[in-house]
Amino acid sequence: MATASIKRFLGGVLVMGLVVGNVVPIKPAYAQREAADKIVVAHRGASGYLPEHTLPAVAMAYAMGADFMEQDVVMTRDDQLIVWHDLTLDRNTDVRNQFPGRARDDGRHYVVDFDLAELRQLKVTEGYRLNDSGVEEQIYPQRFPLWQGSFQIHTFAEQLQMVQGLNRASGQDIGIYPEIKSPAFHHDNGKDISTAIISELKRFGYTSKDSNVFLQTFEYDELKRVHDEVFPALGVELKLVQLMGDDEEYQWMLSASGMRDLARYADGVGPEKGMIISPDSTRNGLIISSLVSDAHQAGMQVHPYTFRQDEGQIVPYADNFEHMLELFFFEANVDGLFTDFPDRAVDFLREHD
Ligand code: CA
Image (cartoon, rainbow, N blue to C red; front, side, top):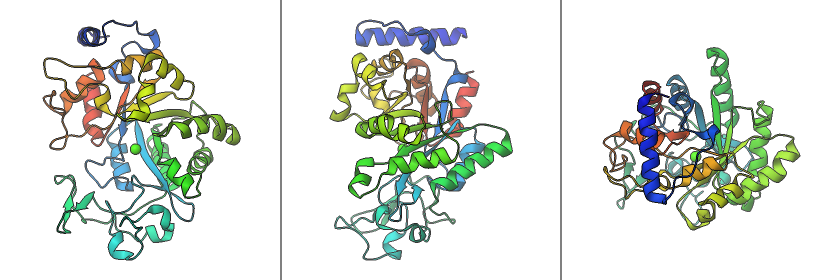
C-alpha cells in the first residue's frame, strides 16, 4: 500500500469515527483495497457518449477498459429479453409516432405490450422528455444529439454475444452485470423474467460464483426467490447484488445485523451513492455512513450508482468528477461503481494504482 493510500485510509477511518462514534475493525479480506482491485461498471454501456443500451455504447465501453458491462433486462410480449432500462419506451424511442393507439391509460407505451419484431422497428435515441408544450427536450443536453445516427433495440443474447465475442478477440475476460428489472411488474404481467434471464446466462456459460457476472435487482423478495428457488431449479449459482435506494423498504438492511441477514443471499450491495456519503457533506466535513463497513463486515462488496460528469451531477462537496471518484473509492472505500463515463473512472484508477 502506498503512503498516500495509507493517509487516505486513515483519513477515512477518522471521518467515519467522528460520524458513527466508534471505529469497527475491518476484516483482512476487505481491508483497504488497492486501486487495481476496484472495478468500473459501464452503466448502460458508455452511456455518457452514445445512446444508452445500444450495441455501439457497449463496444465503446469495452474499448475504454471497463471491467463490467451493465445490462438492464426487460421482457417483451412474446417473451423475448431485451436490454432496456425503462419498462416503457417513451423516453428513448419514436414509439408514439410509429405505434399510435398502443399506449396504456397512463399514456405510456410498455415493452411488455410489444413483440420483439415491433420493437426492432423503433428508432432509439438519447433520453428526452416532452415539455408542457409537447416539445422534445433532451435530458442531458450536452450528450449525443437527439435522433442523430441509427440505433436500435437489441436482445440480451445479442449483447452477450457482443461481450463474449470481444472477450475472444481481445483475450480478456470482461464481466457482465445484468439487472432483473421490476420482477414484480413482470410477474403481474404473467412473466417470470428471473428464470428467463438466468436460463439465458446458463446457456452462455455463466453458471457459478466464479463466473464473471453479478446479477442485480432492487427487489429483495425476488433476490431471495432467485437464491432459494430459481438457482437450485436451474442448477446454477451466481453472485447476487441487492440494489438499494434511500427508501423505507431498504431501511432494515442498513445496520450491521441487517447486512448480515442480507449476506445470506447477496454477495454485494448497490446503493445510491448518497447513502454512503451524505449529500449534506461539505468540502471540510465528509459525512460517511457505516454502510460500506457494515457490508464489508458481512463479507459483501459495495458498488454504488451512478457517477456522471454532466452539469449538475457532481456532488457539491467535490471539486470535480475525479475528486468525486477519489472520495468514494478511497475515503468511503467502495469496491467499484457504476458510471456513464467509464473511460474517466478507468483512467482515474490506473493513475492511482
Ligand atoms: Ca440498472
